[in-house]
Image (cartoon, rainbow, N blue to C red; front, top):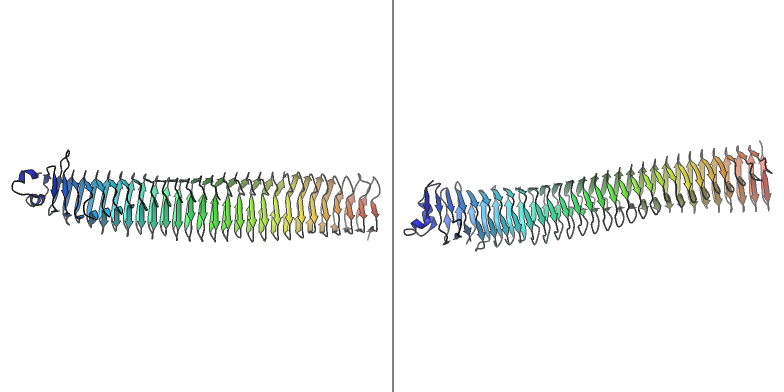
Length: 639
């Protein structure tokens, strides 16, 4: 290569341009360290080098046309107009500072490779890459360029180990462009640090922090793929996906002043092994018919909600953990859908999961525990819980209200401070093969419908099952036992259907019926400290093919104008009377056995009550079988 030094020509020619014109293609021109005020148009391949030790400054307009390759080294450029590249330019250890141009470098259909360069104080942007251009930036610094440091339109760029700071935007990618970044640092921008608009963005191991706007903004089908990227301390959403697509793996989105990840307007997001935490609003918001898949992630310590799903959106969570949120850890509303599998929702300062306004949530093999309110609250929505644990919550396990529908299969509820399941106002709830213990199990009120099949309710310190106010409960093949209070209460014009079930070992009455109705078939009640059934206040009870035994007080107490019919029932071994009716109550017994060897009377009727017994064996080796008084009667007919 022929070396020509500009200072050797200064006696004859005064400009860099003249030296280029008189040099051969491929020559290296070594510039003397000084200020050159001139514009340069390269017409051949050339290397232009400044001094390595003292500053060499070019103040002017530089053009690299098509089919021309230029290398510039150790030069400071203060452009009077944008450097315009249609060919190829390689910049090494160059500085672009200030000047009169709005744009430092425009690459139009050309190529730029920049290494260890510095771009500062452009009035609009440092580098514009347009019209199928290609760019590489390594170890470069971009600072205080007013609007955007790098703009890419319909082009491609690779950026590695660069720093972007103190502008309006860091990188703006548009119109089918592709930018790949690795180990870059963006910080302190006044608006979105990275914008991806109808383009593709790929990043590895970068840090995007301390911006006054959004960290990464995807819109209009913008597509981003992130791996081990860190977003922190951005003032608005750290990641905003607006009708765009995001895939994030092993990323951290932490300590934001607003939302961690916001997905809206048909946006789609996939996250894997990410940490989303300590954002002041919701850690994740998915809205306006958007979709998000969250796998193996940890979402925690938000000052508001953990995951908020609204406006007809869909979220799937798998093998993820949510904890430590000040508001609902998961909120699902307005016709949105959320599915969860193998997740943990714990240690929230409020509700674990809130579902409302026609939301739908399915939970499988998950744990919802140690929340400072109910594990799940549902309002005018649908919930399915399968093979899950809901325990140790300060509120309910499930609180369902107002025309909601709940299905629970193969679940465990225990140690919740309020009823494991509470339903109010037209709720339909189905329970299958589930266990409820160490707490009040069910509280059903105000025209709700409950069906429980093959479930167990036990070890409660309060009423195990309470059904009130025009509600209906149906229990099949269930066990209700070892309660420290009542087994079941059916109150205020409600209905209970009890089939093929067992109720035993309660400290108070096993079933209380007040102004309500009960149908009981093929079931057993035994070993109660007080009554088997305490029936009062205009109640109606029908018992068929059942076994009632070993209660500490009257086994059936019927009071205040109530009616009981017993058919094919065996009542034995009571400590007191087997059937006690008073205050205008009525009892009809047929095809049954009433046997008592501990009390003086098997059957008693007092205060205007009546008992009719047909085809029934009534035996008592201790005393008389019947007793009536005060306008009451007992009639036995054996035909």
